[in-house]
Amino acid sequence: MLQSRAVARALAGASLLMAAAAMAQAPDKAAADPRQGTFKTVQGDVTVVRDNARIAAIVGAAVKSPDRILTGAGSAAALTLQDGTVLAIGPDSALDLSQFQFNATTQEGSVLVSLLRGSLRMATGAIARLKPEQVKVTTPTTVIGVRGTDFIVEENP
Image (cartoon, rainbow, N blue to C red):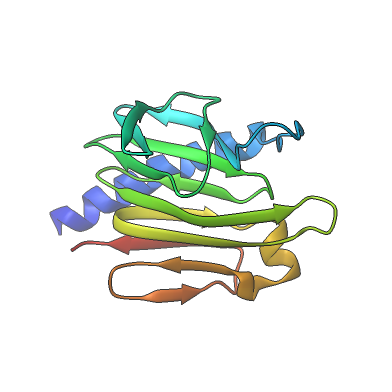
């Protein structure tokens, strides 16, 4: 019961972060910029693991595959990918942006997100609107094929 309340509070906080990120979303246009997404909100202890280095996440920082995003206790983050997909990551979570490809001209691409632990709320973007089968979320025990536009995933190993 206590765990359910904690998860509900965390997801409510993540939903607020997601709403803020959705209002602030603007895909990056710079061709030379290798980012595939951008942190829109960061609350508390949020770290990006890239090339075996740990980087403190800040609003406006780049996200690209195969980044791992870690959130601490009471922490959360929201980021927007180039196709408009919004990821709201709850506390005590570990998420890999395993794959992201997007062609802004054709609006085609693919997204593979791996939730290793914790919680994730995802609102899909252009890729899922055109080809929902190209968007997948995995956990250590499941592969989720995305058919909707807004959903929540929890992984408690």
